[in-house]
Figure 1 (cartoon, rainbow over the protein chains, first blue to last red):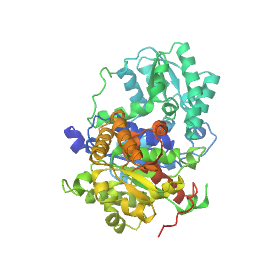
Figure 2 (cartoon, rainbow over the protein chains, first blue to last red):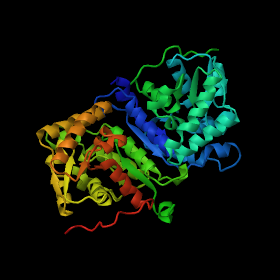
Figure 3 (cartoon, helix red, strand yellow):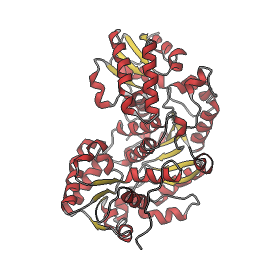
Figure 4 (tube, rainbow over the protein chains, first blue to last red):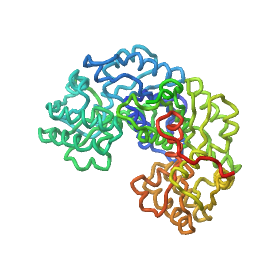
Length: 249
Length: 249
């Protein structure tokens, strides 16, 4: 364990609940991706898995209550409990990243930066397919950061977007086995259009495509849960940072 | 969602970290076992997954630091954050249950009661095989409650106890695939001795025997993670209590 991990860092706060299975899966993948032999080698975490946050995608498309206040309450809870770094395992929530970051002195990881780092880690260049919620795709959460780093971005057509929505709803409704086919159909269509990798840019999507079935696809899948967990583990000195992280500009 | 769940209950606090994968798995199974169609239907939880708690089994066998103070710090954190019910997904930690319960006004679920309830839910009677850490088995955490409820209890022999220890260590060392064979060998030996069910009485053991492989065994396996999650969901009005819960005495 590095000195930084022992002394410089306290609790990793996790603002979860969006959705709750994604929050729990993030906590589990953080443990699984940590080089460790015993309990005491792991990063101490505090997961606020409160699913009462209003739906992020509906709100951003003007169809529902604003989730910002509920997210700020979660941030305050994590701050008061002593979090020294915060991860938010929900892509759509990052449409409020600037307001959340401005409200706290605790550094917040950014899931899009984590995914961009993971694409570099995987050695991916060129055309990248992007999956996510309607709000994440329509409001361009990923497009500009990916373009800045020299990637070309393609997004699903209307049928593919409906498949993303179906897969995400199935995971949120505790029917993960019904989530695979729509997610897989969308992935295959992006690959057919030349994607060198597909970003699972909603934290329900990695739960729709279990790790054991990822080999069925002809390209790399970048998992936003795992990417965010790796970004946290880099900050805690548990794994190495990927090389070649300089921005293309 | 029941009224009780909406009004009477706040956050479910989870005193995790013992080990951290078991804490995260408990949070995930709680979600998976909840009848829900959308994020907002789930129980709000706060998982303190701090793995720096000294080893419970070593301490209880006189070979290591007492974990009580670290567990009390976690309880205080959950209390201050507003937990109205607390679950501890670690069987061995329940050897300190009385001190923990005496230190807080927040009700603590008891994992052994949850497992006993689950045996009734599964319709199990008669001889039950019990797996767990050396401290859990040697100090009789489960034996008296099971006997009081009319069960006969059998425990692993020395070879079986070594298999439990190996399986638990493999899960804690992030090698779950190496945990299955020792756990399975111990289960098979207990079944050969007439066990009508086997209690996975350490929260690493359900992670050693994935849900998809439980059908390989001739008897029911009672999973202490799932049993504790069901006990919480009963308290939140999300699932029905098992029938026939009266004590045998």
